[in-house]
Length: 224
Image: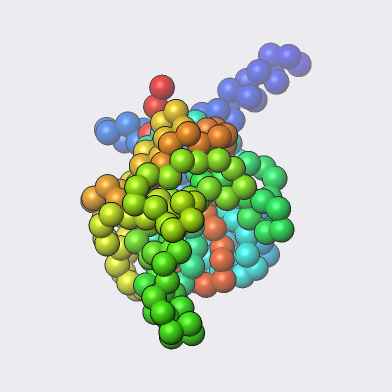
């Protein structure tokens, strides 16, 4: 029995697919959500169609990996389907939700459509100064020292370049997470990040936050 248990654990530790020539392993097989688990969402919130992960955005929650990661490079492609869409990629997430919210604690890499800022300005009469739509990096219920430039309250790393594209277009995120430091590249250019993350090991999550979004090309390369 002990041997069978050990073999079962070893099988769970194997990657979902063979590594590509560059050392990356796909986290999404294009057919179903093997390797992922639904957190606080309805069964229909997350589905697979045409080789993409479809998210309705409702209810708010997450699609979380079934295993934890520490040091890695993650590649994700995403596109919002409507004006003002909101979502995120969570790094080093915990199994427990952040206080008062339905998604997990962790470091959020913002996935936000430009229309969100446009609508904010229309409602308030001024441009938002506490968020951007080009790849903010910030902590949700955990610790992080954001890189400059920062939001006025110091909680977010603002991107130093405006690189993300609008809804209906694909965006590419390259996220490097090593020893508590996170760096984000948006469509080929490094823009934001932070260090001193605690915890610096955990789950990876895709966020449902009120609007439809597609994800594809989920690849990871684990590092020492």
